[in-house]
Figure (tube, rainbow, N blue to C red):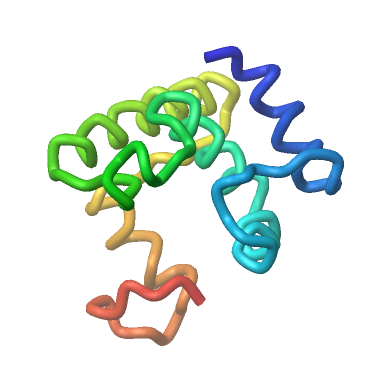
Length: 114
């Protein structure tokens, strides 16, 4: 995966100069509003597994094995970002430490990003 090209393509999608044909317009807007990282992760998975739902029996990850493969691809993407000083991959322990900081008064049992 060429991560420089990935970043450039994500910027084009966010700027409205390109699109990912997998979602309808409203869903695409939601992905773009989510963040550059959401767009990049979608491109990474689309490149690795294809963008066409029908090729995968109507589901992006139809079986548990596909989920594991997707996790590996996203972990490689996160590892590349970490080399550039950006942490994208968090363990459950990391999350348990981060959630109270982000949500301050939220109980730990609620895994909701505030």
